[in-house]
Image: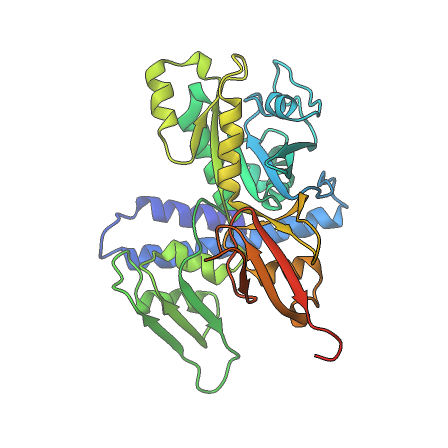
Length: 374
């Protein structure tokens, strides 16, 4: 039986199995087997694409952060890119206007944002239909995914796109499970050491964990669960190739739906409404994009000179002084004597801090290095 037949057989068995306490163990094992089959299928497809030479459209990364526009054809991705950047991306009334990746640049809050207009995806994108694999592979390299949706078809389009992205290991607006998994070399005393520091109420158990790991041919490992997770999240950690990304849902064409529907869509989590036809809410989309990027700007200052407020270092929130040192040069951290910080992260102005000090947005940082004889 081939991989496709095995996948279909397992999916059918999961669908016809009643979900209750007695069957969750069996369903958990089936989900583990299904995840391994999907991973093997993606690896085979990647190898065959590489053998053919491929026709990818990945563009060179530029700017401080990257945002990918993902959606079905003719939802307004190209029009949005043209409106907020100085890039002309062809927009038309027919589908599949964009056939390759079109990059654009947006300057916002002193930060250069690279926005990628990707070709519209269709159902089956995870299996490579309609260049879907290339679209999703490019989206994985971004710092934020904007899923552009037609407000009149919001629910159906959102479910389909989320299913395609989930199939290739993208986890949207989720944090990685608080779990430690350490695979060890096989020995004569193989054992799965399972520890849960919280009550497990969502189907996970020591027995199920051992059975899933057995299907993965893992017989010697340490597993520590620090939160209540389900079997899907457990499999995500075992697979080790999941990408956890922020996502903003943009509902375009709200000029075609009722005010009640606009109100409902605007109140959904991680969502914002938009009408490019009416030029409505474009600034709000940009502000929500900035919030979801979850980055901060750090300005640097040389000793005896004013701060450089022209080009900040753009880093993820909760970054430390050490992160900035690593951005400057890989050897800087080992040469730091101390640092001085001005801004909201300091208790007084200025404050002398160490490498582990957590910085906040628009802090000014001055790094003092050791001298040659120190």
